[in-house]
Image (cartoon, rainbow, N blue to C red):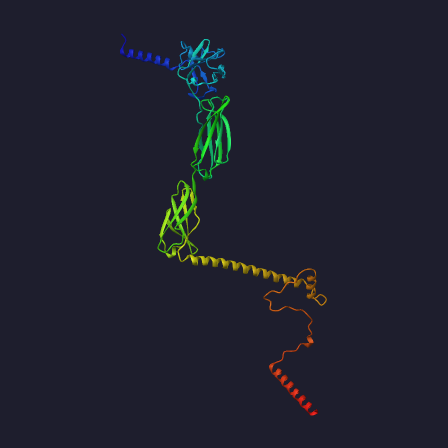
Length: 454
């Protein structure tokens, strides 16, 4: 009788052999776990296989190899209805073809005209003299649908105004011979790139990428990627919708005042600031412009005050979030009794500005006129043979109208000959008096003489 220790060792050795037998398959097949297929279309099953080391000497790749697909169960014997395809036969339950090179252990297979009853599990088996084996642990689950599954839509990049962003859309292509067409619906212009790519499980997918620059106007706008599958003479479509969540600084900031009409001192006035931002505005600030100065008066979206004399003037608000701030236009707070003076002040200021501009224009015009006249007098020939008056007459005769004297000139300037012999020296008051007395005396003497003659 064996010792208990030896019995335990034999049992462990036996169990190890049993487990080794069950854990090492005769064939190792590689294929996708699941394939979604459209009715009426085709399906391609990416497939490859390998031979375990224990059968390396049995398998001979130079001998023709047949590929077999078994439906629902890996059992081959006694279930002929489950064998839906055998590459060594010309007639099969499923119309298909092994497109892979079996001698290179590639068992990729295509089935055509898929119907809803194709939905099931499928196992792969190879037959080659003298080696025959089925991978009972690996299968592909084929799911046949009347409508395609929705494409996958992802976003690359931060969704913030001013940033470039890429939208990626992908749709499975279970029938690579007739891949889907991807189209976009976006609230902006874009550029797109499309390509057919292989996935890690060797299935095929169509990828499309669009790029554009984000604006705050894109916030909460829907984007759509649509996959159009050609099936026979018709098309089947599926789409994926997504709403953009764009971050942006405050926009359309505005300030309002209630009541908007002139108010009495002591009455209550409400000012409200509104703005659009994402994330929402975290801080509202109010400012008053009075007497040419700007001062901060309040914080908060609403600002209420009991009106005093000094509260009249312009007000505006600023809205701020983590991305920036926005400023509103100014609004007037008018106090009754001040609107007349305010209106008069505005009118007076406008009139004063108009008068100032007019005076400056007149001054410039007169200055230019004088400069023009001075230039003409300087350029004209001087002398007795060419008097200035003669030149101006010739100009008038030629069709040029002589310039009129300026309004502020007190007298005209005349040019002529001067007889210096007739000029008298200026006499003093005493000399003038003596001259007058002498004339009077002479006049009296003449008169006396005349009387004597008569």
